[in-house]
Image 1: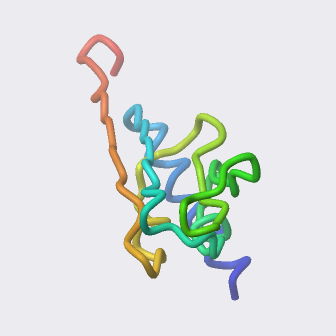
Image 2: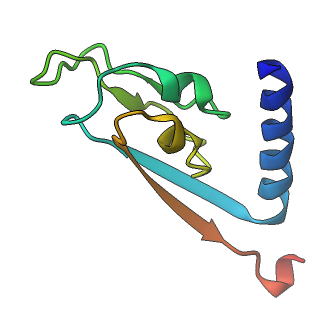
Image 3: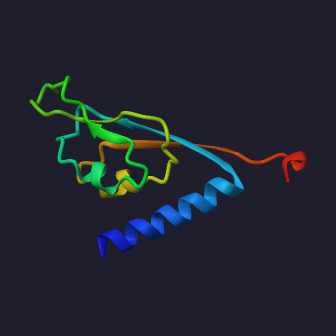
Length: 99
């Protein structure tokens, strides 16, 4: 079931990227992130990982965006039980000459 859902999400994002340029970025709050890794498993683009070089004041290794490719889909923010993720989405619509 999880693989099927992942395939559907991949297809949706591939179609979205063909029609418009979509870029995203996430910011994870060290104050709230407990390193549960739910966002890592939920990310369809696999751009999130645990930052093993950083420990929060509460003793957790927080999640971080580690590579480009985020589309700003916000699935990570939806599954985060601590609401520690803020998603920024930047959309550049194609110009008329590109169509």
